[in-house]
Amino acid sequence: MKTPLGAQPATLHFITQGSALTGKLESRLGSGEFLSGSVDGQTLTWRAALRLPAPLSADFHATIVDDTISGHVILGSFGKAPFNGVRS
Image (tube, rainbow, N blue to C red; front, side, top):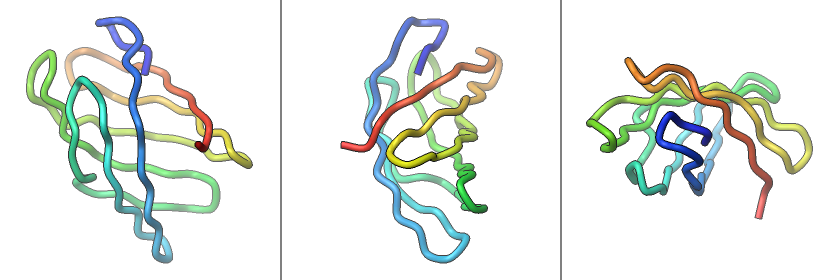
């Protein structure tokens, strides 16, 4: 994630069942299970709790194409931050 605090590496673990998305986010900004999530084709949305720079719920919006994910996260009053990654 490219946040106001600089680039923040993260690892995402996704589990899908129909249109339901669960999983886990691991980063220096916080780690934990997704609070909610959904899948619609190649589009994913989910909410995760982060703890830095202040406790907040982060809303993620992403598209997956092959082994690549890209999108943005809304970090409350800290604004919107882009992110991208590849499957490991």
